[in-house]
Amino acid sequence: MPRLALTDQQKSAVRANCDQLFIEAAPGTGKTTVAAERFGVLRFTRSADPQRSVSAVSFTRSATGELHRRVRGRWGSSALTWPHRVTTIDALICSIIEHLLRQGVIRWPGDHTSLVVLDDWRGHRGYRWLAPGNYRRVATVGSSGTVTSTGRAVTVARSGIGSRKDFHWHLEAGRCTHEEIRDVLAALLRTSAGRVTIGEFLRSCTAQLVVDEVFDANPLDLALVDLACDAGVACTLVGDPWQALYGFRGARPDRVPRLLEARTFETVELSQSFRFESPTMRQLSRHLREGQSVALDTGDVYDVVLAANWDDLWQGPHNVLPISFGRTTNKTDAAAIVLLDHLVSSRFGHSAVFLPEALVLLDLDPDVYRSQGPAVLGKVVELLATSGEAAPEKALSTLRSAMKELGAPRRPPSGSTEAEQRQAERLTALALRIRSREQLVPGMTIHQAKGREWDRVGVRLTENQFRRLHAGLNPEDEEDRKLYVALTRARYEVCAVP
Image (tube, rainbow, N blue to C red; front, side):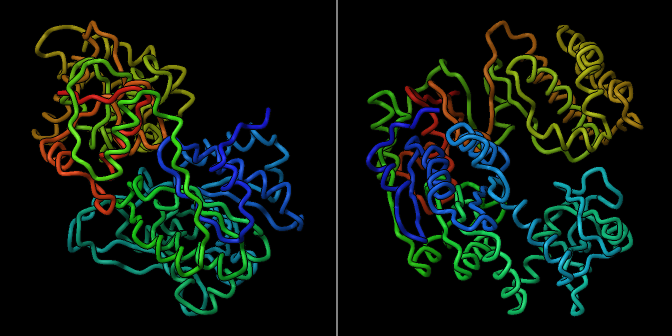
């Protein structure tokens, strides 16, 4: 791959000769390009110890995958030979915990030193809805260094494992989720001995750490970065405070400046955007970032439509096919996601959001679904394509039977009257898209759109969001940051969609 033509700003960021560097990158300034280029420079010019890695981490699989692709494409496969890697922060934390298990610093029930780490407990023994007043099991480390659990009171209803017996049955099998891995790391970091041991491990195996999208980090992530700095690991942090969206995951963008100041990071700004191809978008981006009042014109020409949540997208124009219904909370929700994926993959060439969770919840084999799904689900689509008023109810019954036909151990059960009405409304909305004679365009949430770009973008905004735009955005408010991200995805034009 030929050397990229970098701007002077980008060159300064890539070549910066300092151990602690912060690259602040506005939308379209080539943040991922610079992160990949910086990784390669560190890998091939400053990686003297063959046992210590140049490692890059990010906070989502999509962001990590894109950075991995850029590094490999620019520098070749040798850039990622052991011990060098591009991975998620969760994978880095897993490697730390498994190292401590192998060294005997901590002990896992059943003496496991290699773990099966799940994204979540959906579909596994003991997983259920927990109301306020219930207790949820969380992992911790006992005084003897053995991983165990404790009960934590549920204050806001959520899913999880409440039974100690079920929770420890999973631990004894060497099985957990990323949440348990993080709980164990947090417990260790609360002790001086744990911090010293983890710091020594980081120093021994990591020479350079590149952290992409650092403003998406939560307090535990930032504590790990801080510990790496303290251990003598050179750190490059990349991000934009205007694009921090993951408060619901515990991200604390307000703590990043404290880390930068405490560890005396040198800052390089990337402000020259290559995304915006029209004067309108360049002006809009500048006004948003300066907190000026902004008004959007209504339009009906767009390549994608964005909204804060999935329901807003389903209530929009019938030529917009949202790529998810949202998270699955039961087997019928999961079946609806599987049906939607059948349509999304055929129309847009990629999977519906939350498909993996849906397949796990239904206990469906992905290969069987891919091979047999089109024929089996085609019957459901055919029912929805009819104009009869009873089509959604008939399609819902057929959909449940289809899950059994695709290999689910049991047919998803019916729910309450309210739940059944909700499912019928979903299928009604889907039927309107199937019957639409217009070319369908994808609809996705702002979180799904982060890091991506299109020529023309439509946004579905609430009255409150329009008021926020009129007043001028504040980067310290997460709702304003969502609007900023949504309105800076377009190369040529962004419009409001009724």
